[in-house]
Image (cartoon, rainbow, N blue to C red):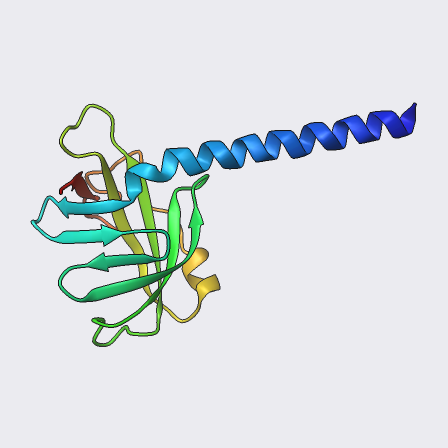
Length: 143
């Protein structure tokens, strides 16, 4: 009986984690595509690359949907910060159309992935000043 309970608990745990991961994948779709921010800067974002047009690239290492951040290695276009690491915190907006979501470059000169990830999160409760004293950049979808 004890082995059956352990087996059933394990099956339940696997099913629950699969459902959670699936749900997270679906909810992340608003972050991918072509966007323009409230400063007029264009972006293209997919699973592995965040491009701030015309030529700044972030190579995505990790998406953390539960805590709403991305860890990336700075690529071309970063004059003094190339090959350093960035943490990008994001949040979805409600009732702020056409702005769907916003982001904050919480860390952009970290020496390694761990340092970027350990940077304190942006203050999502205060999106007007929660990005190191500045507002989150608001993003809207473009064709």
